[in-house]
Length: 355
Image (cartoon, rainbow, N blue to C red; front, top):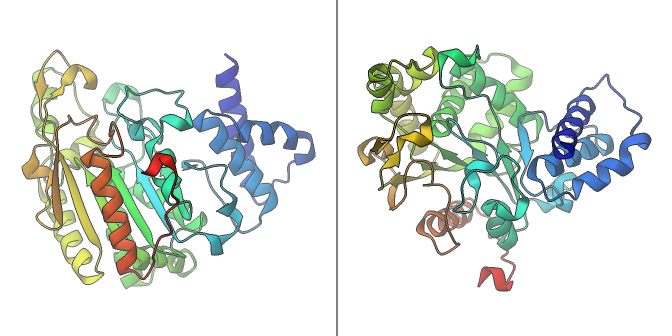
């Protein structure tokens, strides 16, 4: 209904306003976008705020696929008021907002007060800029074509560069396959920097690589998931080839993990991994009524950094019930410690919410 129209129209205006050759008559839309930017709906407010930011700035481009988790913040056009960027990356079947929902079921029309990074993290540390990536993560062959995983990762890195990520310390927070995307982005960026490809975009991407100070993985299958090889074959459902190659244990994941191990040590990138300790009802993944650990702890721990077990299943491991939940508390400590080591002392706002 009306909400879907608001989502699509605000998204269209955000996309058009990001194009250099397109100069929309924003006077006509300005009032509507102002109202929509204050919407409680995550997508509407993010889209509307992106369009407004593009109308006020020639240097900031927040392209489709990059969302604002705190759209109302005054710091988006004032880089000096941002201490660090925290970039959230969802996994398979996830979303830029629903993956980071407070201990509740996924909600495609999610409201900002359900989004824990917005309420708890930005509530305590308003000088953090919170971005959330969105990419198409189709699982099955019948869902149609999509770009390869390396292509998607490269596209996301360019969008982050356009949004100004890399101009200050950055920490990635990733769920499931999103963690593999972060590792792939780092690997591509490091390799292209070494080979001196595409100088213009490269310097900005190199800045992202250099300024990455921490990565938090929630149930990332560093060594693959049995789902890629077992259950879908048993149920005669085929994973998309692009997904199957990424999730199946084998040389690609080994190379990726070896690279990231060396990279995190050389660049002094802190790493924390959260592992699911409860079985997932596979009906949630579109399968029959089975339960299993989708990413067992031995795959969720890459062999370096800290490990934290969370008494939740694969889908809910990144959906803490409260700010005292280990899945949130440990992340907040990790972000504060990583930034402190990078020379940034975060100012905390004391509100009843943060006691």
